Amino acid sequence: MYTEVDIRKLAWQCRRGMLELDILLEPFAKEAFSELSEDDQDRFVKLLACEDQDLFVWFMERDVPEDPDLQRIVRIILERVQPA
Image (cartoon, rainbow, N blue to C red):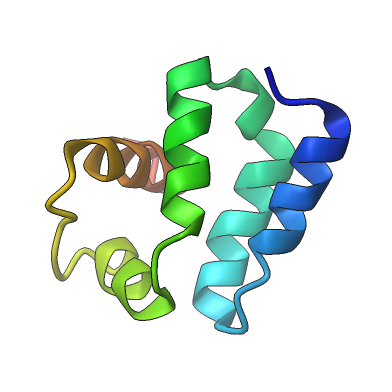
């Protein structure tokens, strides 16, 4: 279980230095992270350990992560900002 302090730290880690990533990740951490299942929260933490270049390519939908866990959390984030 992640505490409010943990979520604030994660939001800080979302500040990547690439505006496109900051716009996606930081609001997601602040607004949606606490609503995720524990498994999906862990996937988000795992995602934050990835390289910015990889994240950018995934979020621009030019490629998908090989790891199914990362595929899932990328899709969750994209669906949040691109509702059907």
